[in-house]
Length: 322
Image (tube, rainbow, N blue to C red; front, side):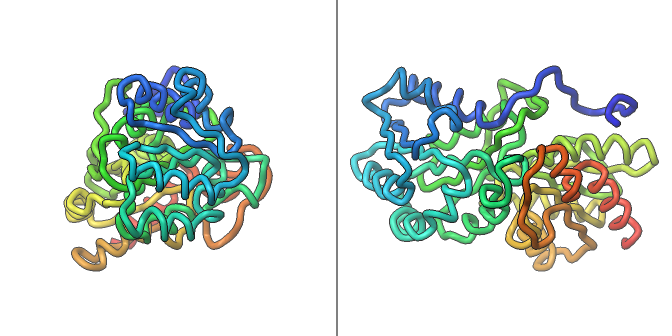
């Protein structure tokens, strides 16, 4: 599909976003002596091994005891350390929600909850591991910042940026190799949306892996005479409401695209913003109230409608509703 399209962004390499976290974390270890790591028996999967090898005195293998890991992380902040916890997104949220709420969010502890293998693109491990509710769970917690970057470079930049942010952060990333299409030297600004492509007919708000699919969708829509604005919402909370409202005021309609349930995700946050300030037609691209299943990332994204084709269909539908 992409070969015949005039894409505004291109890539020469694919790499998993979890490696962006691992490389950013190692860089932090070399520049910030207060940064420490904790992992629940998934050092290889979280790409934390290089940090552990170089800074063994600042790394804690907690074993398969995620709730205890969160408690230890909260305690470390009292001594002025900046703990980065690492495990799968399912275990980083659903398994330890009580500990995060009570020990981290409630008192605003400076813990960075770093979560890999999020969404359907975890793939063959299936529904029990493919959490699609985590963004909603975490954004509802007071004091919590929620970030969902789109590629290796943006994930690395986000990892480095959150160390300077005071307060709890949920950083979400994934397992599959994915196009690297953002600037390796980018400055990551928490809470500031990135307008990637200007447009006038419809706004596509995308996050995480779906940002690349939105880039493809924009080119296909442009080829059919529809001008789509593409905005990368890497920070789910705090949400850049000014950028959202400015864009939709211009285009008159919106599509949200995310690897998450409709309920509680980015789309919900955008819909709330529009309802309060500028009601406009909107369509969702996401998972419609179901669990995932085992399959390759590509198969699952296609089956559950989390791809460029679904974004194109949603854009055309919402433009017709204006």
